[in-house]
Image 1 (cartoon, helix red, strand yellow):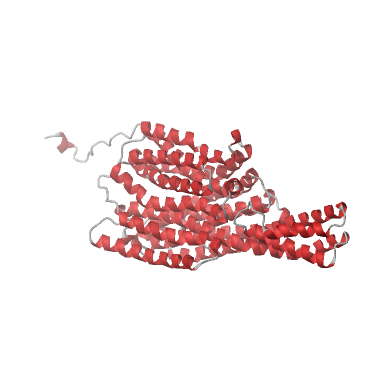
Image 2 (tube, one colour):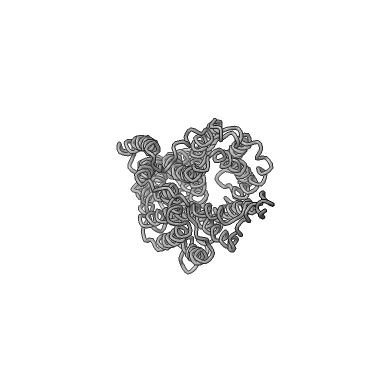
Length: 568
């Protein structure tokens, strides 16, 4: 009788877990921090960057959209590259490329070069980030897996809180005269450390059955995304020409073509970029729709809010970064509150959406009550509630969407969902940024109209009446409008030059001239601030509308994560 006969139930001992797994986890988390910081920093820095490098309003939108759009395109294939060529190798290539992209951003001498460097960052970031998930699953035994993934929540929370503040502080501090460039230079030591420590501590890892790359699928998905984002950003700059609408229509056609191609490839036994069977699962299709609407609204809101605080209210970059901190802190709180409530599934997500909508409504009420002199402290309660709602919404989202996905669909599902998150962010920046800049000229002009009685009174007090007064009042309105819509912020609009001439002509003495200039400066500053505030209020209504749409679209999701597997 053998030992095996005596103990037939004994299983072979489990292999020892990877020795350097915790050190490797911190390398992976460092990569996450770099991505989270760079996804947010240009929201804070964009007004400063535009002031130095020039460019139109579209430049501000492209600084964020170029990164997220290229990230969305790359994420679909980034994980698969690791399966084929090795996750450690692709992580190191991605980290090195991301670091080089950061250096290119820091030394860019024009807006076009900076936007191109942001694309480089996004593409290499998409190669770097997906490798961590596969390596964590291989490195950690089941009993430690939850603790390893649990590290991501605090790191993401701290990054979202600290990112805008760090960006604002670095720009205000102006170390070595670098200004905004330091927000990218800080990635160099982080990136080099990730490469050096990654080569030492990350394990060799790849899929035992890697799928082939679907190059035509990548090209079709990339083209479809570009065809929708490009005309949204550039169309307004060119007064919405025919080509902008043709491109948006073509994007729909290309998305349909992409779906047809992927289905055909799957039927032929190939390796499609997105597994078609996913779209027969209610949780996954509902998750894509919900994620697209939600992340569009949030990314667009964050861009516009930072433009409003810096350009409209005149906050410094540090003050603007601190103003967003309550939102980020609220999000961390919301994640914590949601943990014991996960059993409520879709109800928790719906509850978070309503709390967030109330928070956005609270921001709107705050702006109405406080007026153009609103302070960051006055916005704390509403932004805190907004963040709590966002944390509650996001906590169950990925679990509900991915719970019913089969093992062989996991890579495609995770990549697709994350890519839709990034694509939604790019779309939201393009859409809400375009709405904001499109309304701004009219908003400032309307605010100038509202201030006309006071301006006329100030002018009449120094004996400027009749036709000279009419010309100055009309000139202030035109100048404010033209400055708000100017494609080149450095150029002085012709209407502003005429206003200066009319003001000088109306002055009968140096004292009168000084009084006219003071009245114009006061009215101009107040109309600009009020115009920004009015447009910001409109954007807040749009964001609340998008949250309502998120609430409705979320009914496409199953009530609980476990229902996703049934394909409901």
